[in-house]
Image (tube, rainbow, N blue to C red; front, side):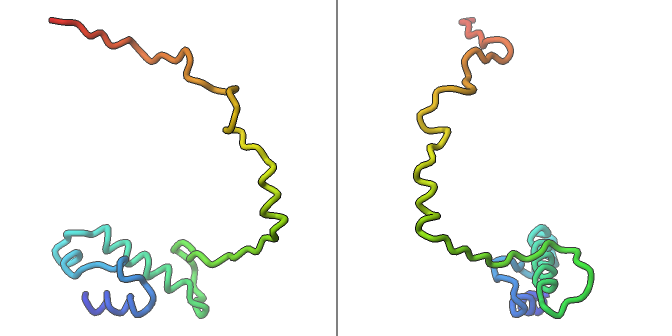
Length: 105
């Protein structure tokens, strides 16, 4: 079990996503064991040579975006609806059930 944990870390699974041997052997932390196996499957399917069917979620990829200074400044002129608006939903008149009666007994 310990060798498996070492090999999945060598394969690319982060150390904090692995598990301790007693988590599986003594069944003390089975959700962590399942999470490690899931991350191993995700890592294996993300390899370029993988040709089988996908059963795990796709590994996230970097999606860098380059915005010009003009594009970044375009949002400065837009007023957020939450700023300075007193219209819309409020909690006025909302009652749920009976009022709490505090009495001295």
